[in-house]
Length: 213
View 1 (cartoon, rainbow, N blue to C red):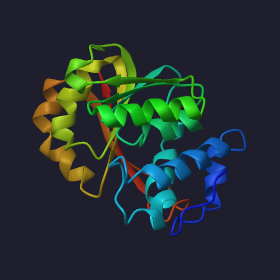
View 2: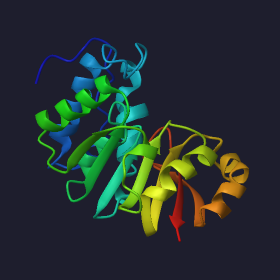
View 3: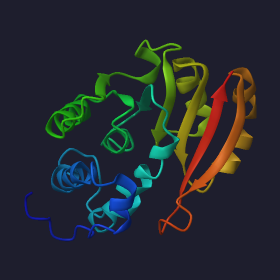
View 4: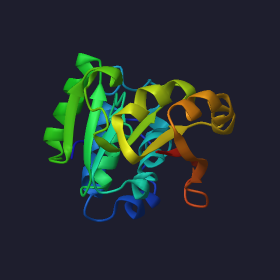
């Protein structure tokens, strides 16, 4: 592995626990690749290196236990957060990374090839245009849009009894309240805000989960 870039956050001890011995090597390589090329590709800002592991990689990895064997879509995958991180942590799950920007789809394809992730497919396009209507078991997204806007983008892509697992910030509960009309329109049930990584990560990961009837 190449020398670590100056300023890159040291790998937290909990990283090995979250990924496990079988996949931590790929997680380290992906983190290094993102540290070296992330700013060049417009994937992360110049101030992210000192918190790359804790704020981005582990923030996504803690979601891995919520993934179900099957096919999971990642809307607006961008740098591969959470899609590539989850694909590394869960080789038993197939991930479809959906990203409209050509430069970012190339990054995703290159990373999937370099990291030898046969469970990753990359599709260029918007969520509304990819043609997966009712075909996904789960769908996830991180830092894409408000919950009320994500629902019409994501719910039609998920099969009946499929699930949305959307990474959100501190305003998640308010976003659920604001999305009441869309929740009803798209027949979402069991809508819940969940805090992940309590007592494990310095900064918890908050997700909204919901089932599509």
